[in-house]
Amino acid sequence: MSLVSKIAIGVVAVVAIGAGAAAALGGVFPTSTDTHPPCEELPTAAEARAALSRNESLATNIEALGEGISVEVGSPCPKGQDRALIQVTYGSKPEREAIGNLLLRHDGFGVPVHLVEK
Image (cartoon, rainbow, N blue to C red; front, side, top):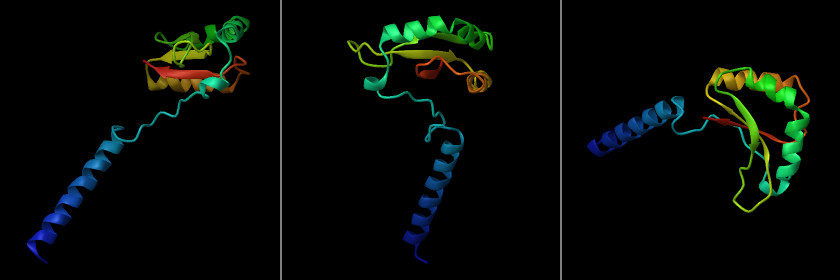
């Protein structure tokens, strides 16, 4: 085996190990799957506010799951688009899991919910 081949194999091994370590630490491949529908499919801000108002007790229950959790009407769309959803902000993975479990046991708000890590 030539010196060039040995160097090439060594470089490939180092890159593979580095990519694996980065993926394991979450640096290369994102682990969050929280997304929202396209803006044109979201309800208006007024509809989202009405949904939050109708489901105030659900919002209160969600916020009670952790100190850093908040529930509000949010707009992930560019300025000028009257589109919104219910945005739940959380600070830790256990909070995220608790929110997900609670939402699975309830009917939801009637509009999309977007979970956002602080």
